[in-house]
Amino acid sequence: MAAFDWPALMRAGMHGLGLRPAEFWDLTPAELQLLLGQDAGRPAMSRDRLSELMAAFPDRNEGAS
Image (cartoon, rainbow, N blue to C red; front, side, top):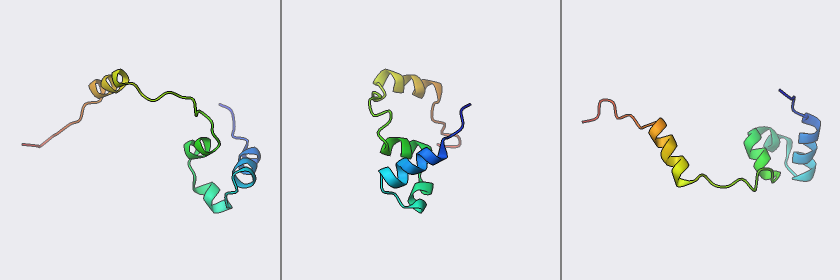
């Protein structure tokens, strides 16, 4: 697994995006990735994929009447 390039991420977040240090550190990696415009071309989940996930992980109503 590759290590994070913290200096580059900090430059991109604080210098490039103008975030304050506390704002940078409050972000999740996914949020930072979104702000930096990475994975912007990823398509939305399809109805078929949602149906697959719902079948694989059904809601449980244990104890419900």
